[in-house]
Image (cartoon, rainbow, N blue to C red; front, side, top):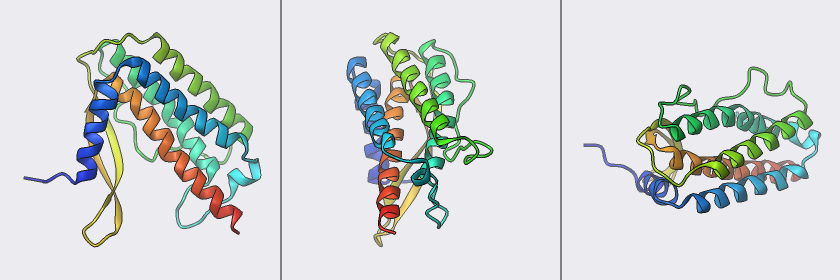
Length: 191
């Protein structure tokens, strides 16, 4: 029998408590707050700052936003299918999904696309009933775990989620990349 690390146990409990069991009004508010935080941070990022390559296999801010612009439409299609109590045709969404040419789009186009997607997700959540459905989608979850020797390593697993858990994953996904963008901007400012 495989023992789940405590971080995975907490993540699963979070999806249940803040997603599946939470009132839709709370989910809407939390997702909207995460989107607003990302939009506010990115509003101050210039195209030059967005393109700074940090090295070491890390994504630039531009590539992070490309990732969000590529994954959000799929996650939205997934959530819409689950809301209709249907199997999602797009699951599971690859964790590291990017466009074929992440740096090809202009920064302004990426920002506009992300803002439009944020609005679309919030519109779907605004119209969503506070009712459970039976449909589930396989979601690839990625969290950081700490090994006994103190190293931090990513843990990947597939979690079967209902539409409310999928909705709250929008928040988690945005906040994860918000932290990544802040770190990238601090590092580039220090150069």
